[in-house]
Image (cartoon, rainbow, N blue to C red; front, side, top):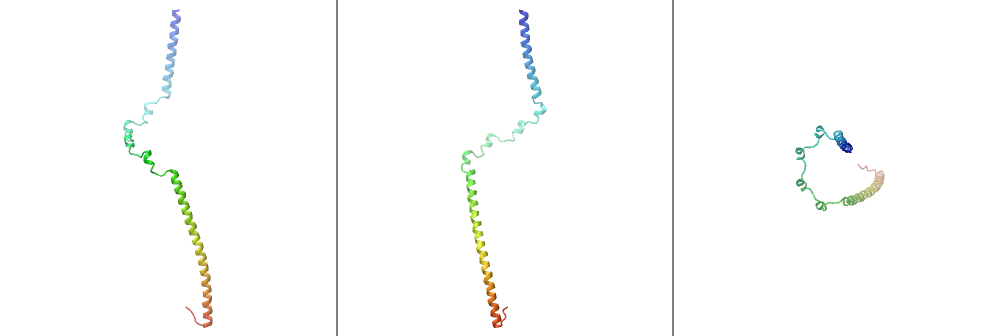
Length: 128
């Protein structure tokens, strides 16, 4: 009986040693080496980054409430787009009226030139 018990303990020890060896092999296979860790930031490197005190200088959520939201900006952009479209329409309308006026003035000018030519012919006076 005593021999059986000793063999059982050795099996348990061997099993635990195997578990530890498996963990060590895993750590060796997947763990970082000194060279791997050289790429990480040091304490000195991290001193250049903002601290909690530095971040207190930034705006808080309450500070941001006074600024326009995305919806506010979208509404304002739409309002401005409509305003621009109205002005463009007004400009196009004015341009069309001016085009009509210019056409009418050209016609009247041609008619007046015809009158002057008739007057010159009948009166035999040359206009400059």
